[in-house]
Image (cartoon, rainbow, N blue to C red):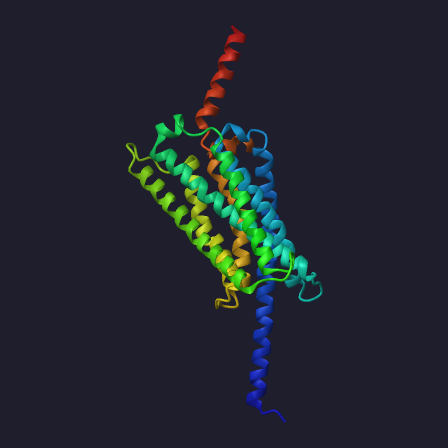
Length: 312
């Protein structure tokens, strides 16, 4: 017969397990809801920027980032369905592995593009004359294409060394490649933070010291958003593959923050580009967020002059 003290322990453990299951279901449900909102937001960004992306070189970065976030969120929402349904649905092993590797691939692509756009915006603020006159015309396109290509190469190497897609996996090579990925993640974070700090100092110590707005403000907010929301997913993924110890609750927490990170980016774009007291089309809102106020003003002035000429 079980003693009362031991029975109380078993009841307490069962209640704690039920609370953990309920908490995890809430976190996963929130993740799915945020992911759905992120799909809609990034889809809107892709649709609005695809028509006039080449008018502003920084729009190419946002277009690629939105594409990477869209793929990431799609894989993210599908991958957590088995956890959400609690054993009533399970994917085959190769599907789970494909979703996992594709998510990390899109995560590294987004981080690399964010680091690249931070560095380019920092150069534009520090050396405006060089950036306006000497900057290579297709620099942004080449950087984005090279980023996708190199991240795809890392993705294929990890898939070949750590999975059975291309033969027997190699534990030593797999761990080495994940260490390379950890170093790459640290370098990208340091580059992004260093460039953003220099950009912030340049804006603050400028001749007129205006508040950060337009595209510099967008870059600073996006970097802060990554550090608070996007970085936990990278830490979890590296810790899982390098067998580092992490708390159990960090698993679902990192998934929720990753969905929040991808979903909040379009919100930041539209909030920074909106005008107080005026309702603008979403395309103009994005152009304002990219710092195209001068171009928009020139277009409006040209249209106004044309109307005056016609009336005369």
